[in-house]
Structure formats: C-alpha cells, structure tokens
Image 1 (cartoon, helix red, strand yellow):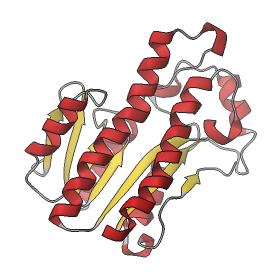
Image 2 (image 1 turned 90 degrees about the vertical axis):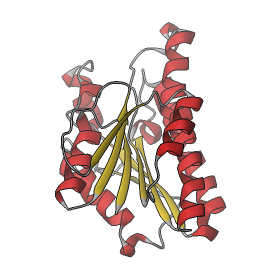
Image 3 (image 1 turned 135 degrees about the vertical axis):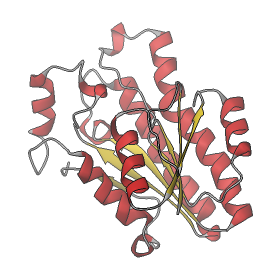
Image 4 (image 1 turned 180 degrees about the vertical axis):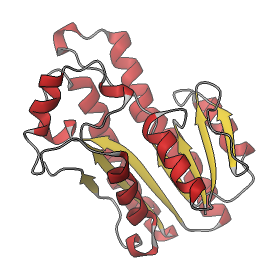
Amino acid sequence: MNFLITGTSRGIGRYLADRYLSQGHSVIGCSRGEGTITHDNYTHYICDATNEDEVVNMVLKIRSIIDVLINNAGVSSMNHSLLTSGEAAEKILKTNFLGVFYFSREVAKKMILKKKHGRIVNMTSVAVPLDIEGEMIYASSKAAVEKMTRIMSKELGRFLITVNNLGLNPINTDMIKCISKDKIQAVINRQAIKRMGEFEDVGNVVDFLISEGGSFITGQTLYLGGV
C-alpha cells in the first residue's frame, strides 16, 4: 500500500513511517523541515500543513495512488484560557484543524479519482472528552477534527473511503515534555487502564482501521486507555 503520513520528522509520525516501511509499503511523509528518514520507499516533502497552497501543490505532485492518509501533524499547548493569546490560539487551530482539513480534502479527491477506495486516520486526543483544564484551545481544535471526521465519513462513504479518529492518551513524545509529571499522571488516573500509551499501541489501532477488517468502520473515535 501507499501511505501519506504528515509530521514524519519525529515522534508518532516517524514511528508509523518506519513501521509501514518495514512491512514493505511505500510512504510519503512531510514536515516543515528536512526529512529524517532514509529509505528507498520513502519520499519526503517540505510542507507547512497550515498553508493551503503548499498542501494543494504537494498533493498534486504525488503521482502514485494514495491508499492511506494518516493526519498526524499537530501542536499542543497547555495554558489557562484567560492567559492564551490570539496568536497562540490561531497557530493551534490552524495546525490541528485546518491542516487536517486541507490534507483530507485534497487526498480524498485523489482517492476518488484514482481508486474510489481509501482510508483516512486522524489523530485526536483524550483531552476532548476529559475537559482538561488548561487545554481549552487544544481540546477545541481536536473536537473540531472529530466533528469533521463524522461528517466527512458520511460524505465519502459512497466512495468506500473510511474516515476515523484515534484519540491519543499521554504518550512519551515532544508534545508532552512541557507538561508536569503530576498533570500527566492526573490524566492517566482518569483512564480505565492506568498507564502511558506506547507507540505500538498507536500502530496496532491504525493497523486495524486501515485493514480489510476495518472496512465497515467509519466516522468513529477510538480513545486509547479508555476514558
């Protein structure tokens, strides 16, 4: 299969790219900077997900069929609502919502024209259902993605394109380095299974959602750890 994964320079995006490359698939990745993966079946684009023109032009350059889109690129912020600047809010909303929208829209067009089949997986967060203090803008951006996913799944279902969300719990990536251990533990304590998430947990769920066994599942959000 051919994958397009956003935010592959590090963290979960890098892990997923390596995972599917090791399985013999082809991966197209992107980030704001140079790529960090060297592999014969990997192609990297420098692309700012918040820039509509850059996303449109990048997807137009891709000649191969895209079977799977994983919208992984995102930014996090933890700050009280009254102390959050408009600039910070705009950056989070543009990256976490508009970036996902731009890529989903453009790749879905290509899926319809090339194959009338595909899988889209968006990364959201347990911050949405848990209503965590200090994450109002971040959680709102992810809630918007979840609503977008439900509506797009209905719009794209006739083309056999599924659209689902994976709601991440705390995972040891750069996104949580600025959050205190006490606050991370407080989130974990609200989970049914009280531990940090692992990269493999993410990969296992994505594997199912993009498999033939997941072909009848769309418009859903699966939260890791149970919330």
